[in-house]
Image (tube, rainbow, N blue to C red; front, side, top):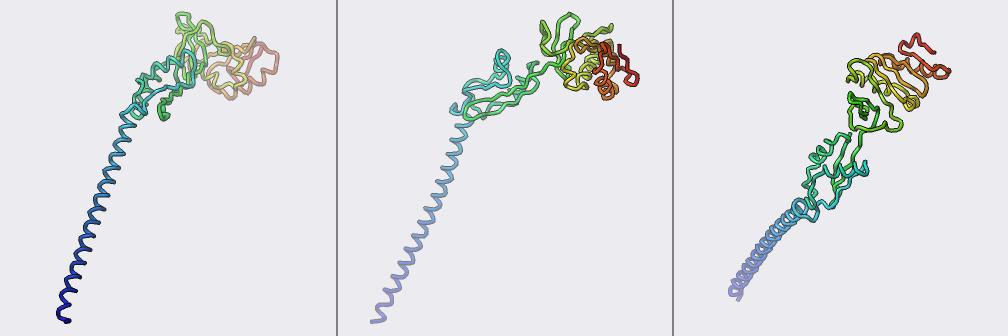
Length: 251
C-alpha cells in the first residue's frame, strides 16, 4: 500500500511547485507592467505640464505691469515691451524685453520678471536730473549724474541748477564733468541750495548759493574746500573764493 501512495504525493508536490512558479511569474510580469505604466504615466504628465507651461495659453501673458514710472512714461515703457497677449509666460525672453525698455533714454535701470500665472512685471528706475545744461541752440537739456542728457525742457525743474559754459568751446565734456564733480563733492545740505553754475573751463567753476557767489575752481582739494566753505558761509560775505583753499578770499 505504501508503494502505491508515494507517486501520488510526488505528483502533488510537483504540481503545487509549478503553480507557485507560475504565480510568481505572473506577479513579476504584473509588477513590470505596473512600472511601465507608471513611467509612461509620469512621462505623459511631464509632457502635459510642459505643454501647459511652454506652449498653451493657459499660462500665457494676460497683463503687463509697469512700475517705477507713471502717466505717459509708463505707457511709453509698456509699448516697448512688445510681447503679444497669450504668449506663454515661460517663453518670454526677459532679457530682450529689458533691452528694448533700456533703449529709452529716460530709463536708467530696468528689471523684468515673470509673475505667475500670467503677469509680466517690468520695474523701471528712471534717470534723475542732476543739472540743466544750455546747449548751443539755447535749449535746456536735463542731464543725469552720469552726464547723460535725457530730456529737453522749457524751464529747469525745481531745485535743479542750470549750468552755463562761458568758454569759447562751450559746454565740453570736461566742463560738464567738472560741474557734476562739484555737486558730488558738496554736502547735500549745500548742494540743495545751488541755483546756478558757470563753467569757464574745466578748472574754473563758479556757482550761486542764493544771492551768494562761490568761486570753486577745479576739482582738486575738494574736501579742504568744503571745510573752508562751511566756515565762510557763517559770515555775511556775498562772494567767496575757495579756488585756492589755503588763501580763501571773501568780499
